[in-house]
Amino acid sequence: MDQITTSDDPVIRRAKFRDLTAMEWGGELVHFRRLYRDIYQSSIKGNSILWLAETSTAGIVGQLFVQLRSMRIDLADGYNRAYIFGFRVKKNFQKRGVGSIILETSEADLRTNGYHYVTLNVSKTNIDALKYYQHRGYVVIGKDPGIWSYYNHLGEFKRVNDPGWCLEKQLV
Image (cartoon, rainbow, N blue to C red):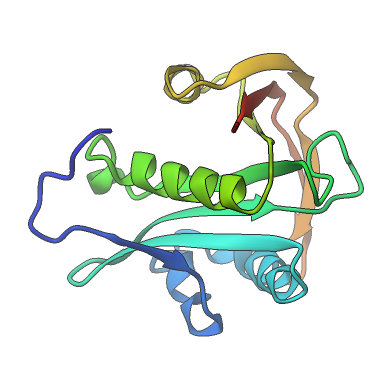
């Protein structure tokens, strides 16, 4: 695993309600406010997990969401297969091991809870992320149309079209 090169090592933990505003990263991700709230509500019901990387000086520097149950059982069936999404690390904390720690923590938690596979999608244009996941044992299992939607913080409907690759990793 890559090592953090600062004395302010991040703590990896599950998100709490009070973290939702900080997850917007000073307004950079404010458009996801409603989405974050919905994912948090899903976590209360046991359908998802929100992982955060937090430092004592910079606050939240990384986040990764895990969907445990989905209507698309090919991504997350609630028993054997889970789906990772919303994985990001603040720019000045990238390539310092923060992402690896969050990813490894989420995979270990899934493994402990009996999950055998984890899936995720990566944009076809994000070659660095594809290489990152492949280096960590993920294999491409197909294409993903990358079409999804959400309501932004102003209540406006937003449609995303970002074709990608679907990857999978066996956890056991």
